[in-house]
Length: 123
Image 1 (cartoon, rainbow, N blue to C red):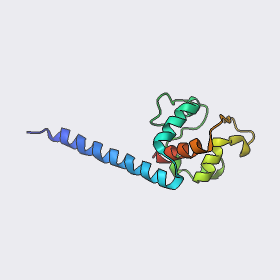
Image 2 (image 1 turned 135 degrees about the vertical axis):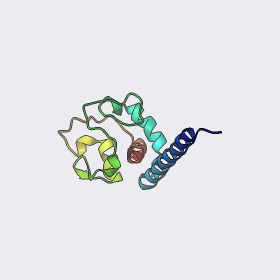
Image 3 (image 1 turned 90 degrees about the horizontal axis):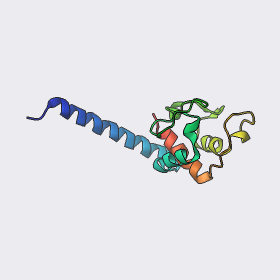
Image 4 (image 1 turned 120 degrees about the horizontal axis):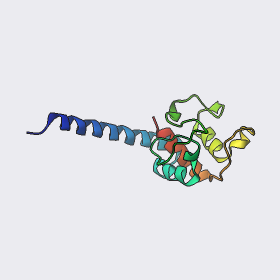
């Protein structure tokens, strides 16, 4: 006889993975980017050096704000939270706020869209 608790855990894991897949699909739709490529780009550009970013290994930085729940925020860098504003910020933060501590690390337009997709997939 199967353990009823083990079955419940499996159901919960399926629901959570389904929610994550749905969040990724929605983020891709609103940004035009790929959340999985975005995760790789976040690692490549070292974003976790300054930010806590769920799902990114070693992303435990305390310089910038934590990025969990970014999709639910009203503002990004004092701009309305919209994909085009987030990608602009990620590519060239000094163009939006010349006194920001966030450096321009050379994020390409394509990578910025993917990074936005990943960040919008976080809940």
